[in-house]
Amino acid sequence: MKFSVIFEAQLADPTVEREHQVIRDCVEQAVHAEEMGFDRIWAVEHHSLKWYAHMSAPEIFLTWVAAKTSTIRIGHGVVCMPFNFNHPARVAERAAMLDLLSGGRLDLGAGRGGTEQETSLCGVDKDRTTQEVEEALRIIGKAWQEDELEYHGELIDIDPHPILPRPRQTPHPPLFLACSRTDTLRQAAELGIGALVMGFAGPESIKEMRQAYDAAVDARDGGRFVSSVVNDHFSVLCPTIVLDDRERAQRIGIRGQRFFAQSIGHWYGGAGIPDEAVVEGADEAAAMREAAEQVVARLNEHHIPVRPTATATFNADHAYGTADDAIAYVERLRDAGADEIMCLIQMGTVPQEACMETIRQWGEKVIPHFRDERREQRLEESR
Image 1 (cartoon, helix red, strand yellow):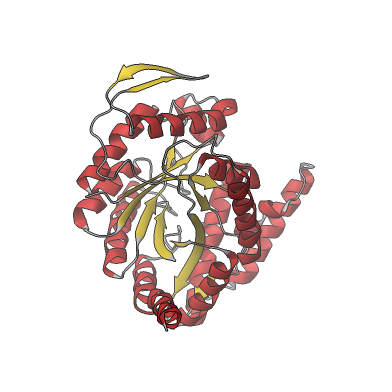
Image 2: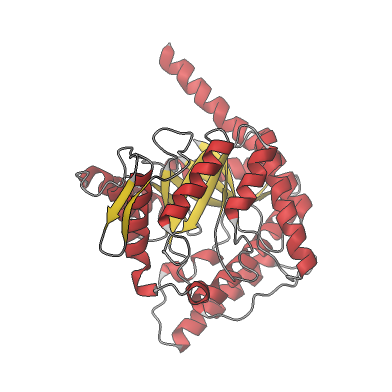
C-alpha cells in the first residue's frame, strides 16, 4: 500500500498575504512528506474557487516541489482536461517536461473541473466535459507513444506534429481519473487507468466503489484503452489530523473538514459562504452534524433528492486522533480495497503546525506500521 498527501491550497480568510503564505506552507509540507517517507504528493487544479482551492497552476507548484525533493513521486492530480482549460497537446508537453526534470517521478490525473464558476471563466462547454476528458486522455496517450501526434476525433483534429520533449518514463507517466461516482469508476477501468477516489463516505462506501471498479476491470475487453500500458491503481482520500492529544486532533480535523465541506458546497451546490470562524474548545462534532442538517434542509426546500453523496463530506468518521486511531482507520480502508491512502491534511482552518505534526506522526508511526506488517507477511510467506 502507498501513502500520499494531497493539496488543494484551501484558505479561510483569503487575503493576498494569507494566500501567499498557504502556498509556501504547502511546499513546506510536501518537502516534509518526502522526509517522512511518503510515496507521493498530489496537487489539484481548480480555477476561481475562492476558499476551496487556490491551486490554479499545480504544474508550477509541482515543479518547485520536484526541485526541492529527490524521491517522492509528483502527482499532477488532476489536470482539468476540457480543451478550453488545457489543450491536450499542451498537457502532454508540460507533463513530459515535468517528468523529465523530476527524474521520472510524475503521475498524471484527469478531471472535468465542472463547476459553473470554473467553466464560465474559461468558456468551457459543460455538456462536453466528460467527452473532452476522455478524448484528451486518448490524445495524450497517443502523443507519448508515437513519433508524431496525429488525431482526428469527434471533437478535435490535430494534424501530424511531434510532441516535445518526450517523458522520462517509458512509454509515459501513469494515468489516473478523478472518480466520485460509479460511472466514472467504470470509465477509469474501461480506459485502463487508475482511480482517484473521494473517500468521505467512509470504508463501507469505498468497499462498494472498489467492487464496482474491479467488476469493470474484469468485464472490459481492452477496446477503450487509452494506452498500451494499463494502470489499475485505486487511490482513496483519507482526511486526517494526528496529534498526541486525541481530542485536539479531532477538534482541529473536524473543523477543517467542515470548512472543506462548506466550501465545496458553496461552489458545487450553491450553498452560502463557508464559516471561517475557529472557536477554541467548540464542539466541532456537533457543529458538523448541524451543518449536515442544514444541507438536508436546503435540498428539501428546493425539492432536490437527498442522496448519501449529498452529505458525505460531512461524515466526520476519519483518521482524526492519535497515531493508533489513524492506523485503525487505515486498516479499514486497506480492507476495503485501497491501494493508496491519499492524506487530506491541508484543510482551510487547519494551522500549519498541525499539518506538519500530522505528517511527522504518519511518517514515524502510521506508515511504518504498514511497512513492518508487509515485511512480516513476506517473511511468513517465504518460510
